[in-house]
Amino acid sequence: MPNMLSERLPTKTWVREIDARVKLVAVILYIFTATTLRDQHLLLTADMFMLGLLMVAGISPTYLAKKVMLILPFGGVMVSIIPFVIPGEPLLTMQLGNFTLIASRQGWEAAVLPCFRMATAFLGMVFLSASITLKDLLHALNHMKVPRIFIVLMDFTIRYIAVTLDKLDRMQTARAARGFTQGRNLWHLHTIKTLGTTVAILFLRSYERAERIYLAMLARGYTGKFHCCGHCHRVKKIDFGFGVGVISASWTIKFFDMGGYQWIMQLK
Figure (cartoon, rainbow, N blue to C red):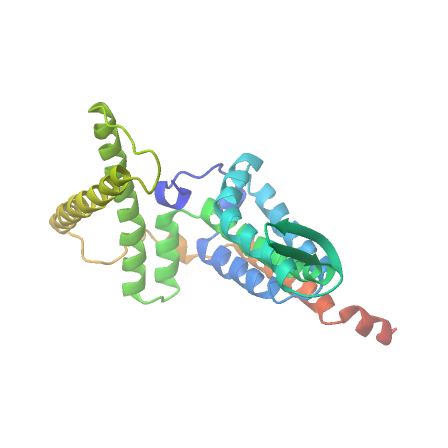
């Protein structure tokens, strides 16, 4: 499960102690700034900076590789299609039956930008999810005056995903204990019946479990408010320095992307 859900972080470093509000604002501004870059080399520099930030935060390559596998089927397919839809100088030809696919050099060059931009956003989200627990995130959003209904919906959605996955795992274990045999493929009638039954039972059990959880929360005095001990109100010097450093790095890269080098040469 994601670390924000289980609230167990990969490692505990000084980056973990940075105020969640500072990390949210700094990294999101960095992502927005970096994804507007037009120079491939500067985009790569932005990716390397964010990758270095992950290393400083103690994120292991194994953990990062697991996260990459989640986005690769979606982002990889999208980026790999671009070279075949943009006309230009032929670079690669593939024969698929009666169809001929031609990848152009201009298409490959055009695919680099969205690939690097996707990598920047992905690395930023991995950094946030690996360094901020769900509790810290909700408190940060609450102090940033985000509408409470949005925070409550996020809290319940993430937590009930865990409840649903746990219930599904128990159903699969019980099914295997009873000698369940799978269908031959996804389109097999036995598989379709099993999927339909599983979804229906999972919905009913999850609904009943959700009601019990909500009633238990009300019995314990839940009012929809987030209580904080007060430590998250103070932004320390190290928090301020981290935020300024990340935002300054993004603005510096953006400055050179807008032609800052020529401006500097003209001043000389």
